[in-house]
Length: 623
Image (cartoon, rainbow, N blue to C red; front, side, top):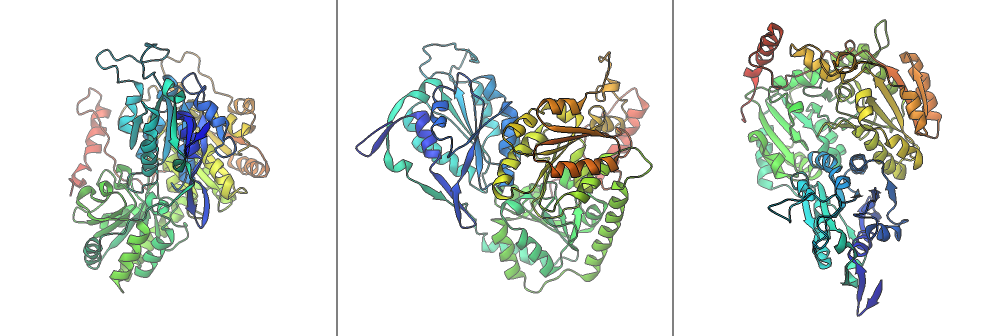
């Protein structure tokens, strides 16, 4: 680096990292770097130039060495969730397969509206050495490469072909990462030659800058329309999504519900907006919901949806509500606020709920409606208590969830994803404190659990170092992506991981059976190409990665092992077999649209199709 005439002569890579390290954000009156560091795996496409630049700021932007690029992206997503989208991590990967491995995690971040910055290697701008190692040649368009594949799954995309371009590209990328409406991943392709080219960058560009996340004030006319509709409601209901937490609007949500006595149901992403014991928390809604929430959803006449994109698992593929129900959608993103002919309120959830409270005056829901909703919740609580209780029946996900729920601290964070555990956690977990549950069902990515928890733990250790991050994971998801057990040990970011082994992909086997099909290719025991089935020794595998590990046989043993894990100072893995057929939560489900064969020679498949389609008449057709 050299300096002359108020400029810094830097390589492109050096300038990127220098600029990034000088971007700050104000959170609760405290200034901190908006980028908490990064996850990196080096290759020829990023080690020589970007690696050199990162080494110079190893204290300001700590770089965590990943084991797999996809899991690095999952860890970045878990970090962003824990920080409520106020801070993010970058991921750097080499050109070629290293970068393409990030595609799935970019899609996860996009679906969940999470900030993540990708700084990835690319082929040479000059094309002098073409074709190069790991280059994907496109015969008709030499500008088109693997990195272009990220365009559908990011909110911002650029390829730097000249060092000066980062002067506009980086601020635009950061603006996207911090925008409540457009928040999502940003991708910047860095050709290997351009990374090392030099440019005289203005010194002012590197000065410290403090950012604040914008709160969009809702339009007064939209608030007035929403208030007018709410005042007509005889059976109002609030659907609270993950956006409530991202807007730091939990207190406003609870205050609004209490002031107007409106029952609240939660989406999967909004699963920990309210404590389970709050009298107006009627439970999780939808396909993996609760009888209580789904019962009032069927009767509600006006539904206030706050911070949710109304995904099919929330809406029961749009069968969970009366066809006459009217929706008001409060969302920072216009795209989400206008779905299914909702009356939109485009704005920040905190400001919007405050504005609604100011205008709706003394409206309260009819007492009989609230009493009915609470009665449904009491019935659901009784069902869950029985469902999670150990008894004279096979081990189940629900039992394991009940044991951990009864022993963890109120601020411990629970992480689950895809497979059968999201449904079981959503239905059976009793929230002890807001913001303590991360069930990744936005993109429903198996393999997120351990990696996402590692990222969450990195963030959690900065604010709540004494609390634990607890992972629920099935054996199928564990086999897909488990190497961040090793990462957590190396970085001393303790996790408690419960591996619940049901012998394969049991929840999809359940769906297979429920649609009239015989078990095939899901459970290890039912895969015709497996000639010598055997169980994985998950305990030994976890030990080989440096974790403490043990295997238990009963919920009582699980409880004792969990206590030991809480007392331990390093990552602990607890393994327990659960039944693949028995023990699933049978109540709480709404209809879900699933493609089934319209013709089949198997009478069981035909019967299942007819049964599945029998609920389609309840589906709202975009109104």
